[in-house]
Amino acid sequence: MVPEAEVQDVLVELQRLRARVPLLAGALAASTDGLVLAQDTPGVEAEGVAALTAAALGVALRLAEATGRGGFRELLVRGEAGYIATYAAGSSAVLTLLAEDRINVGRLHLEGRRAGTRIGELVDAALERTVQATPTPRPPGPRVSPPGPLPHRT
Image (tube, rainbow, N blue to C red):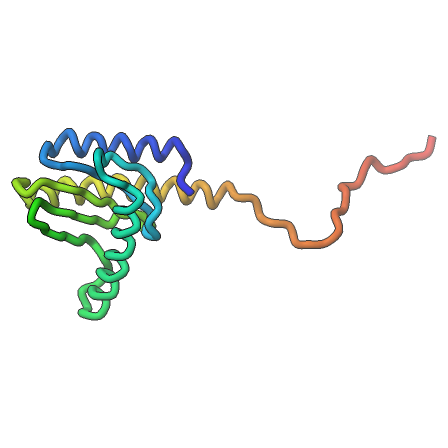
């Protein structure tokens, strides 16, 4: 899991993104398996969007692989009332943006790619530190106390 300090940094990045792109209706960062890391999605159930993003990501990964297009970078869905754009964010997260129909799609991609890169750096660095800080598990068996001071003759 991502430590709270990095989650706050991701949330700040999402809020900055929404300030830079006024026609964004929401932004969320999630793990590739559908868990919300941080969200700024007023009026939208973030957990549901994150889970659906994970499902769409699975299909997008398979489609890119089956057609020889390489690793996943982004996915764009256009509905009658706007866009849902998902961008790779490092090795284990995605950024999903909800945008109004009037948005400039080129600007959406530009800002989404930049934010995805930044969020990916934050999440990957946090996960790397977590792995490095995890103590090596001891093998099962009897616990042996460290030796005390050696006896000496007086």
